[in-house]
Amino acid sequence: MAEDAQKNIGTWYIDPDAEDRMADGHAPIWRHLIDLILERDLTDKSVLDFGCNQGGLLRHLYAIRPFRKALGIDIAETSIAKAETLKGNLPIQHQVGGRLDGWSEEFDLALSHEVIYLVPDIDAHAADIRQALKSGGVYYAVTGCHTDNPLWPKWRELVANRTNTVVQDRSITDYGRAFDKAGFDVSARKLEYDGFIPFVADGWTPDFADALNYYTQTKIVFRLVKR
Image 1 (spheres, rainbow, N blue to C red):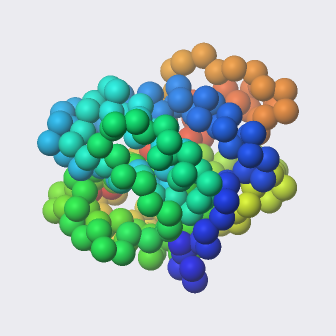
Image 2 (image 1 turned 90 degrees about the vertical axis):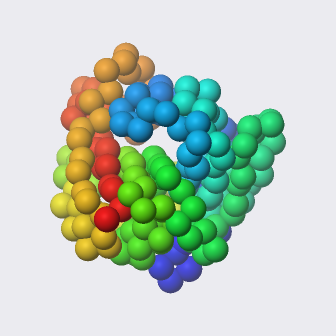
């Protein structure tokens, strides 16, 4: 994502081992998200995962709802290389970067999971995604990293200390206004994850009550339809 886009990095986490473990922690959330996606049959659809990291979300999606082809894009160069080694013969292409230059009206469906809070210029991102989507295309953007999150002041420090990225301070309403202005019909819901949530002593929510509230009440799924 350069002035309006972040510069390329090696990995999201400073600790490469933490980067490898991230997919395991996200996998149940990805499966829950896939169940929420209203578009059920993706067999003839093209899919974008913006901020794909090591490509796990697209591999999960293909296993549950096979698609025709997909692009995973991320600024983390080492993570993209890992995604390429893990994709096997799936119809997935990976690209390093934070902009979708050259991808115009290409995708039926776009996804991002905990990425939009890192984008320096949300207006440019919204326009970029809209340009990449076909007419009527849909973008599902998931984040619990917003200023309406009661844990946000503490999490800003954790992100700064543990990762190679810079967070942005935006509310749920800020996101809604940005995507509406860019030309999307904006709706949203709480993620309301209904699985069992593991206790992680040194995780992002060491207070277990906070973890339960975060995954059921705080984490938001935006559904953004290109007008």
